Image (cartoon, rainbow, N blue to C red; front, side):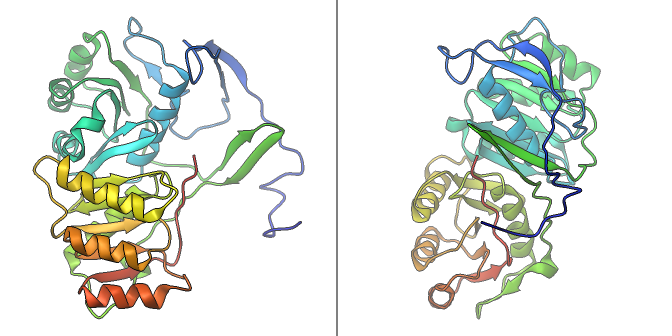
Length: 332
């Protein structure tokens, strides 16, 4: 078997990784499983294993805490503006950017407050007192991760017994690197997905063209859906999520979950007039569900043998649709 041609300087014939034992975890993925954590000091990108827990009197991190917190961190580093995300079981419950970090958190949390309970908060700016207070005033969260904390924020957060406060340091620059998934018998290694879709990369394929506001929301939704388990769907308005559907074997189920959550769970938000991002090919049933929810524009990879049917459905419902030319599956 053979796949793409690769540079053996980047993908060496032998994969050597030096990791040192760091700590015993409270437990593995479940309480009956033992777990430990190893540290690789060659990794320089922001990560949870290297993070400092500021309130050492709080509980240590568990196996799933590490996974969830890293997923949250990976999402917020996508954005240049102040951003916040709430993650549950590695799946975003909400994400937003805003001029102020406090507002970004409020909007992220308002996407799905029910699912956000017991979740993990990630911030891409120093956590100030107002943001810290907003997190504490919302229902229970287990972990907060941020590049740093103001003195006031650190004080009030570290006084809280049941929340872990993690400081990850500078997240301004992500080094291009390989990422891996360990499997029984070996590991899979790939380039990190550092793709950056801009308005210039979008191809409008429908009679109805997206407005400038639509385009900005579509680009935001595309960044968010990169971090939603496939099949993934994100409904967004402005620069905040409205509904998220994740991890379904059927894409239409993800779309229906996202639009239902936008209707039933989002606080002060609606799918009416929003945009929708899907990480893989949309089919006509995607468009039908989007139209029923009031979606005005869709972003998707394009390139399916059913593209013409999908475009026809979008034209029939006067929904603008743009293709990115690439997909962004996340499989764990």
